[in-house]
Amino acid sequence: MASCFLLLFSLFLLAATAAYGDRQWEPISTRDPLVREMAEFAVYAYHPGLKLVSILKAEREIVPGHNYRLRLTAKDSKVRRAPPKKYVADVYENGQHNFTLRSFTPIP
Picture 1 (tube, rainbow, N blue to C red):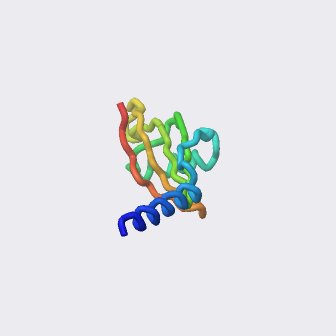
Picture 2 (tube, one colour; picture 1 turned 120 degrees about the horizontal axis):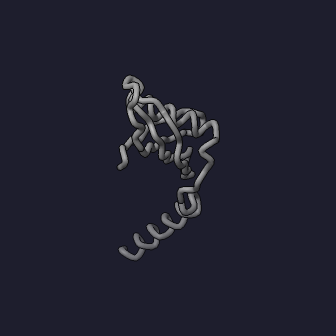
Picture 3 (cartoon, rainbow, N blue to C red; picture 1 turned 45 degrees about the horizontal axis):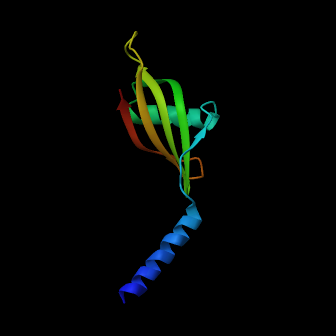
């Protein structure tokens, strides 16, 4: 019984790996208009008072849809000389141009 379960579980893992590959993050251009749109969405969704300054790095993970990891800088738009701060934003795009902010984390 245990060996049957182990065999079925192994087949499931093999099928999942074949369907989605290694699911590794791949670098993409920070100049891509979609990346820019997602970065602006992420900054506004996190805090409407922040303003996107720059996109430092962009990566994509192919899943059903796409996960994007964006390293960016943003600053407080209400403070005239506020220094920009660095953040990492994880955004999910469902393949139909709908975005969901998964996380937005300040980095030192």
